[in-house]
Image (cartoon, rainbow, N blue to C red):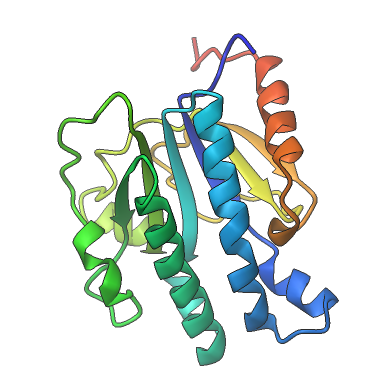
Length: 203
């Protein structure tokens, strides 16, 4: 591949639908999204992607039943822990002042990115994130660079408020399979599709 996106946004949707299909309670699906997240990270690293941003959960997601909120919150804590053990610099972006924000992730919250190590991939997690919260806080995500490609699993054709400032010129690729059914080929298909896009940035 001659043109690899520098920054890819990941919307890992379909955990609840996957759980329902398997005869599980809806909250049972989130834990099954952890290994896909790690597998995607390693694939992106292999192909030279410099930055990933995972959509963990939104401010609005916290309106769901408490069992689901606990399940996706715990899954996000575990996901950050897994990626932090890899060769990556991890940042968490979201409303850390809310009771919905996992306190275990406070050490990863910082508006300053510092000097990035060229050998490390940068990985952002949007945790208890909301586009209105971002905007009203002077674009708290402003240090995050422009997103080249957004990939969404689960078949839905919407951004769901994913980093609106950074995604203004992003290409948008949808995978119909549910997130827990992630396969590396789906990611590679997205990269291949990106090769054929005409990236003009409005020019």
